[in-house]
Image (tube, rainbow, N blue to C red; front, side, top):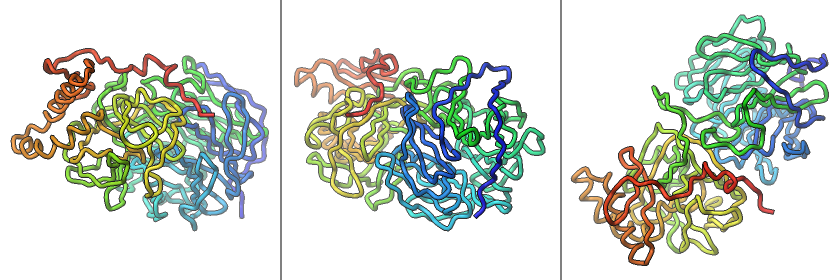
Amino acid sequence: MMCPRLLLAVITQVVVSNCDTVASTTVATSFSYPYKVLLSSDETRAYVAEYSGNRVSEVIIATGAKSTLASGISGALSLAFSSNGLYLYVSEWIGGRLTQITVSSGVTATIASGLSNPEGVTLAPDGLSVYVSEGISNGFISRIVLATGARTIVATGFNAPSDSVLSLDGTKLYVNEWYGNKITIVELSTGVTTPLVENVASFSSPWGMALSLDGLSLFSAQSASDKILKVTIATGATSTYVEGLSRPNGLTMSSGGNLWCTETASGGRVKYFTTSGNPPPGTAPTSGSPPPGTAPPPVSAGSSSPPPSTLPTNPCFPASSVVTLANGIRIRVESLEEGDEILAASPDGDIVADSVSLFSLADHGVNASFITLRTADAFLTLTPGHHLPVGPACCSQLKMAAEVSVGETVFVHVNGAALVAQPLLSKGLAIDRGLFSPLLTHGSFPIVDGVATSFNALGMVKLNSYALPLLLPLCKATQSCTLIRRALDAAECAYKKMLGNAVCGPAHYIDGLMLRVDTDGLKDTPSADVDVASQPAAFANSAVS
């Protein structure tokens, strides 16, 4: 079996940048022909695919210490994270496989086999499939369903396609072509391809690719000419970002805009480039940063507004959150419709099916900041004002996400079995697209991203179970269902005051306004909920020892 495009020249590193001030920092060395590099969600670890080492390695960024996460990967080239960050998907160029690695344990499982020299792996916008670059002279892009391994051809006509990245809006795939020395755009809805860069002398065996945080530029690693080029997507114009490298291959962009790179020559290195003003790796992302280790979320068409500078406190999920229908099919929250039955938890912690009665908020286009919660088997993204069951048993005690601490117990639905109590391992921040707040008819606890959650405080859950069946026919007949949450918030506040709690009424969005409700009426008031963005120390990701 031929080795993919080996060049044996070793060049002494001399970094020369363009007009930007770019500093280079080597994090770890002695890799065996490293290709793709990815960062963990908290950006404390890097994961590296080693082609000749037939493994994926994990690097502690602060110290450079590295260890083998998974071995027996036959010609490891590219990597992609699952949408919940619990799994890595790796392409095996020699083995012809797409393999799943459980990040917490290193356990591997084959997703698909019989592939044709698979290289680049990119997670699809739905989080349920990946795009894989395959083939050499007759290369193509395939789409592989992660749950089944089913494979379809998306686009053909490539000359050794290598790494790829999605556009910010998720409609296009940008693909490097190693032998073609160009970048090709794939319209994912049609499979139509268009060259972005071709017949450019500076393009020489491009492999790794990364997208800038604003989505306007691509970075392409030129393995044969030892440089990284920056490409303006609107025009295809190219410029040198850095040169004098030693066979650069894998690229990835950090949340702070630092470009990470692997070098296969000079002993195999992992490094990053910091442009003036960018924060160092491992710095907790601000509320204006995209999810760590990924491109920022799509911005709605025609929008020029930046991501929000504070975290919304209304109880919502992003569009990318996943629920399971009663028939076992997993779908994104943004695809839910009124009447759909989803898996939920009863007040006693049993798995039940409950129907979506309505959405008090369903905004597909807005970018918002969220809290992320990670356990051994789940990764949940939600707003800080969102509640979820905690404590020794489900589901009598609820806490807002902003107040849940690392080490506290939440309840996870694993492999279709009963709920399992798992400690929270880390807590972080992320930006994602969309704000969705579905209400369940019978007040059950919806299982979202594998975790039992609640849209409101416990008193609201009880009120919902009684009030919604009565209110729904009336509000639908009068087209006034957007007022449901206002009414329920006011009722919950009265319930809390009856119990002696004078502070009540979670903030939320209704018709574009953030409101806080009390029994004196609806009025705009400053939110008293925790502003996570202003208290980064309280939300630093940390591991449970």
